Amino acid sequence: MKITRKHVDVAVVGSGPGGATVARQLARAGKRVLLLEKGRYHRFIGNHLSALFTVDKMGMNWTAEGLNIVRAFTVGGSTLMYCGAAADPPDWLRDRYGIDLTPYAEQTRRELNLQPLPDEVVGVAGLRILEAANELGYHFHKLDKFIRADRCRSVCGGTCMLGCPYGAKWTAREYVEEMRAAGGELVERANVQRILIEDGVATGLVASTPRGSLTVDADVVILSAGGLGTPAILLRSGIEEAGRGMFVDPLVFVTGVSRFRGTCLGPPMTIGTYELLDEGILLSDLIDPWGMWLLMTARKNPSKLLQFFSYRRQLSLMVKIGDERRGTITADERISKPLSKQDHARLDRGASLAREILVRAGCDPKSIMVGPVRGAHPGATARIGEVVDNNLQTRIQNLYISDASVLPEALDRPVVLTAISLAKRLAEHLLRQTAGA
Image 1 (spheres, rainbow, N blue to C red):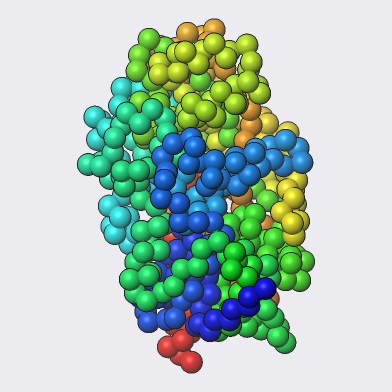
Image 2: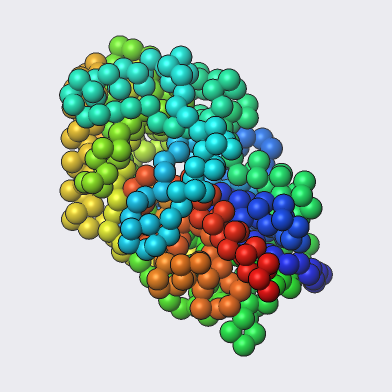
């Protein structure tokens, strides 16, 4: 087997929003950066067939309790399949943990021009749900988006989450390309096995690739492999405190048939409310792509399968909650994630509100169904205060983490802006350290 060795200043594992951001920031500052991604640079995106090759286990990744968790293995990570919603980092991260991400979030908002979409792009379904919710007093509004309105094809038919082939949706690939333009290197299909540690200091990592084993010597190693991948690498590297407890921001879709243009005929998560976050509940317009709709309806509501023929007239709301920190992940990425009574109560409360709004928006009450519970974005598996300090360094010197795994509590809101902000803060810290050395 061929063995390759590389020497760099910084090795970053994972090219999602956390990894791509910190790699880009450091490369722009003149650091020799190597970015390792487990997946490929998939070019064929935006349909069900391509999605099968970009998601882990073709989307059939289940916890021991039967909770489906979808994640992407591709350059750009799960930003290829996210809904493009932008929510500010939570206040509790500043108030309870002393980490103020406000300047980094504001800088990112300006840089990427994050703002709500115009009405004509939001579409009939979103505006109808918005009006119905506000008539009921639920304070819905248009959400800020990582989507360029001038490029958005709002009739994609619910496939936005399968990848945007038009370049309307910002993805972490844009930061990856900026990193490469600044001199950083990307290695695809690199499956990181473990971190190299000598006398309590990280000195590099070992990865397997189609061409053989890759050993990377690095002054700094940054794990950004996500809420599932990062703790597994830590565990394989002897950091046993990782992977104990997690959140997944569980969600359900509540869907009904109307006489109007449906949710699939507009971008996802264009409207919603954060007013219920004090109850740990987020509501927003979102429907499964038709292939996943069929699978999930067959699993939970088989008697409603014939409603597939009304797919383009269905209005749908996602109910997402902040869940209690429970469960484990092992070194080989086996997941256990039980939901608590409180979690189920929040989902039931949100589903009841969604049903009320959909009926008000014109859905036939008899057509409304609640889909199976799924996990959105895992985190808290390498928490601030337990696995990393406030500068995101582990107990192993020069080994840092920059992704949702460091979040100590359920986020219960879109994660990407928070992940970018954490990564920019980490990059700033590392550059200050270098300047002071």
